[in-house]
Image (cartoon, rainbow, N blue to C red):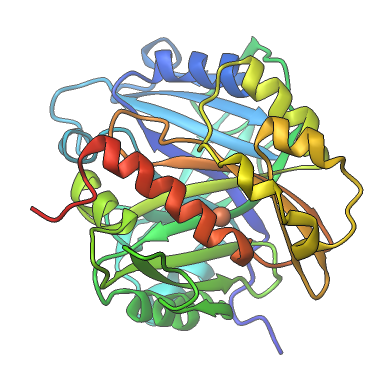
Length: 364
Ligand code: FE2
C-alpha cells in the first residue's frame, strides 16, 4: 500500500519541565543521556531554555519557560512536567502541514523558517490528543547541530545502551480511543496494527482498551489507550485525573542487551515496577526456550513474552514524577513485533498494588 503521508522517523520528543536544568542533569545521571546542546538567554533564546539530550538515536528536548507569561506556563502548571511535542522528520514540511490540515488536523503553529549561520530549518506543528502536538521538521538545508539558537554542550553521560524509541503510548479520554485511531489513520496515514479489548487487558478490578497505530514506513508506533469499566479505578483513569486530561503515558526505548541496561539503570537507582517472584515460576512454560538465563531475568525483574515471530523482554519504570503519570519502558525485541500481551495481567496487578499505596484505586 502506498504511504500517503511519508514520515522519516521521530525527530525528537520535547518535554516542558519546571526546571529543565535540573531535569537534564537527572536524565544524564540516571538514564545515561549525553547533554549535547543548549539554548537559552545566552544563545539568543528569549522565552525558553532548552537542553538537547541524546542516547543512540533517541533525542529528548527538555524545555522550561523563562518568562511568567510564556504560552506553555499555564499547561505546565496544569499537567506538571509533560511531553508537549512528538516531533517528526519529514521531506517537505509545507506539504506535510498542508496535507495534515486539509485532512482535518488543527494547526499548532504555521510553517516557519529558523535561520542562522549554519543554514535553515523549516518547521510547522499540528495538534493531537490533549495538549500534545506533532511538529514537522526538516533540516536538509542545515549543517548545524540541531536548530538555530542551540549551541553545542559537552556533558556526556554513561550510556546504558538505549538505542531508539520503540513506541510512544498516549492515554486518551473515555471513549476517545477510536476517535484518535481514526485521526492517525486519516490525518497521518497510519494503519492499525493490533487491538486489545478490555478482555485482553483486565484484572479482577480494572480494565483498559488499546489500539496500536503505525506509520506508513513502520518506523513509528503509537499505541492509544482508553479506560474501560472495571470494579475499581484503572491506571488510565488515574492518569487522566492527575495529568488533567489526555497525554503521553509512556515512552518505550529499545536496547539490544536488556540485562546490561537494567543492571546499569538499577545501579543508578531507577525505580522499576515490582514483579512478584512467582511470575518466573512458569515463565518458560509460557514463552519456551530463550537465550537469557532465567535467574538473571528474575534478579533484575525483567518480563518476557512471546508471539508468532519471536519473543521480547521488557520492564517498566515507576512514574518518573511525583504525579502518577509519565513512565518509561525498556524493551528488547528478539523477533517479536508485539507489545507484551502475556505480561499485561501481571503488570496491571503490579500497577494496582502501587495505586493501592497511592490511595487511587478506589473510586471516590
Ligand atoms: Fe509499551
